[in-house]
Length: 293
Figure 1 (cartoon, rainbow, N blue to C red):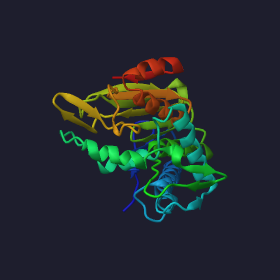
Figure 2: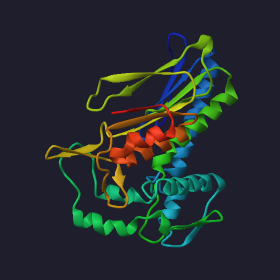
Figure 3: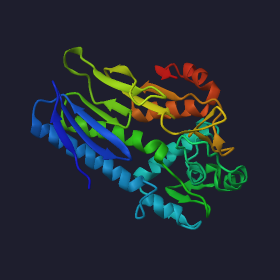
Figure 4: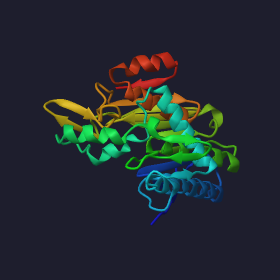
């Protein structure tokens, strides 16, 4: 059952709920409890709407229709088209490393901290089912080859954060922080030049955090703090190279990036992870604030 909770902190209201397999927080620098509840309700409903529409686990949404079309063409609405356009842009920018068709690899890989690597032969066979370049995408119509799937999970949460910030601005001029599982953004600056304190989990610990002081904009984090494999002293990140089907080599444990929007921050943090050992060099070229370990 979906529900929200609202409680008063020292000088703001804190709303919580679960969406997209993540704990979601909404911090609101408003005085009125009724307004705080209205904002929380509107944001949680939007997060659940996006989850219902784009989750690969649902059986009655547009992603299910595309993935089960058996090679037939599927028309999509404007919102879905924008996300597919963005997926195409990321595919081009990353030279094929960001690929929304690579989600099928989850059938072979389970990143549970064990030493159970995927079977090399099975991975090689799955590579035939991966490749955005094989998808026909034009004029709001998508044709996915039979046996392939798309998964928008890599961009959906950041999109939901930015949508929620827009909703917050429709309700109040006061500052609202939206934090969906560590991907977050603020609607406006806090009063009296204050900031929001945000914790970032340090890899390898369930308790140690570094702290951000966020005044404006957004931060997104990519990493393997809880999703990895460890075999013969080698740590395998859950970030997979769609060209090989195997974890990216020498990927950082965690990358956080600050940007104007959560979608932009998420794009840069994900692309950095996909660069593996060249992640920090990539981020330096982007001239953005980042944290990496």
